[in-house]
Structures are given as C-alpha cells and as structure tokens.
Amino acid sequence: MSKERVKELLGQLREELRKTDVDEELDKMIGELDDEIQGVVDADADVNDLIDRAKGFEADFATKHPAVERFMREVIDTLVRMGI
Image 1 (cartoon, rainbow, N blue to C red):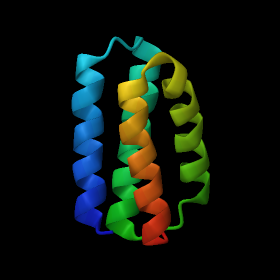
Image 2 (cartoon, rainbow, N blue to C red):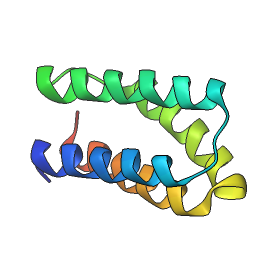
Image 3 (cartoon, rainbow, N blue to C red):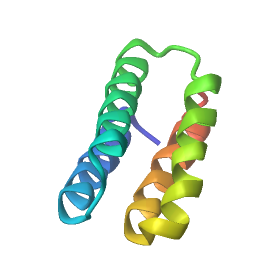
C-alpha cells in the first residue's frame, strides 16, 4: 500500500463526512485525526497511538455512521499494512 492510497482514502473519508450528519465536536476530532494521519504519512513516523485513536472513531462510526466507518476501516488497515 502506498502513501497515495492513504491520502486517497482520507479524501474519500472527508467526502463521506460532508454527506453525513456529524456534530461539531466529532467533526473537529476527525479533522485533527486527519491532520495527524497526514503528518504521519508524510514523515513516515510510528503511529501505534494514532491507529488506536482511529479505531476508537471507527467503533463509534460503526453504530452511528456505517458509511463513514467503512472508509475509516480502510484507512486503518492501509496504515497497518504500510507498517507506519
């Protein structure tokens, strides 16, 4: 998996979020997570804590926003496969 794939998935996640009714707090947290993921992908840094945080979002999305959860799962899986 490539960095470009992660960036593509993040774009799809952002697009899906635009179509989904999420509250302001969750939207802000997702924006911060997106920024962190972008920084990690660009810097090839270790992201174990970031992956754990993303999994927390994924669990919340699974019940409230299933379409968004799918993209979050793909982002997490891609980061894990990249070994970053």
